[in-house]
Amino acid sequence: MTDDAHLVETGIASELAFQGKLLEVRADRVRLPGGGEGTREYVVHPGAVLVVPVLDSGAFVLERQYRYPVRRVMLEFPAGKIDPGETPLATAQRELREEAGYTAANWTPLGTIHPEIGYSNEFIEIFEATGLAQVGQALDEGENLEVVTMSEQELLATYDCGGLTDAKSIAALFAWRRARGR
Image (cartoon, rainbow, N blue to C red; front, side):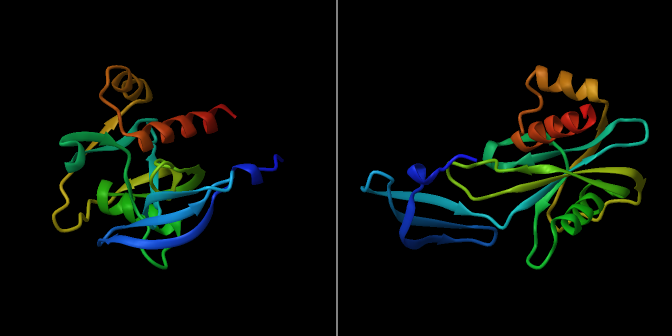
């Protein structure tokens, strides 16, 4: 393992810049490796999960949902924030049921990603869900989405033409394909 001490920034002071319902923004003063000081503004996030649901046919269960920050309907795998006291697996099971309307008999961890390392501490635990049974959605108030299914080739073709740009879903597809290749 490499000694990374020459790259580490050390926190000196931390200030809460914004507190919202989902996340907070902090502005920290840091000591730089060379001895100087800098400021780091970043989003504090509770963590999330993403589920790669695979039907017995091999098709994926995905969602189409309007995402206000990018002002467009996005194609993505089911995902959601980890609630306080909830394990990542419990969150994955809850989100698959609520958003996509499925339960799964089998759960396989596929890894962890850090999607926004330049400005957030968010992590996303990725799970594959198989042995799916459709039980009906239980969407949260104000949540609107459409469930779709796509084969792996259809999803890759969608990526190739720019129809899949959600970074967490692209990373999850990569993790799923790597797990299948082992």
